[in-house]
Image 1 (cartoon, rainbow, N blue to C red):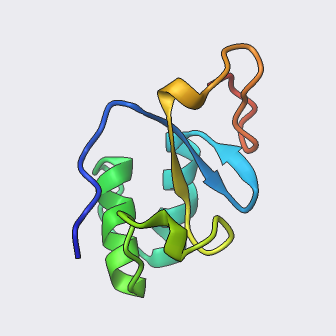
Image 2: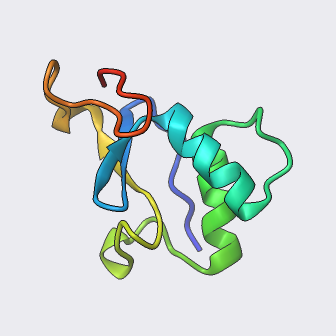
Image 3: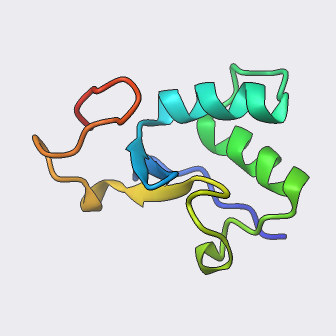
Length: 91
């Protein structure tokens, strides 16, 4: 399974039909998938969780955002309009 590369272009994630910032998505995924090392990057943690449940993150057409977070590129974020659903911080 090809892993999604570390990227500085990921500004947020689409999860459960909501936009969620990287810090909050990490807070959701770490306890849910029982990942011990929460100091790792959000992408690294998501790659481990995806591998655990058999999700190929490189093909987002094969899963929906209710199953697993989908990355949102920074170019898709509208400053002043997009906020994290969990912490309400502007993205």
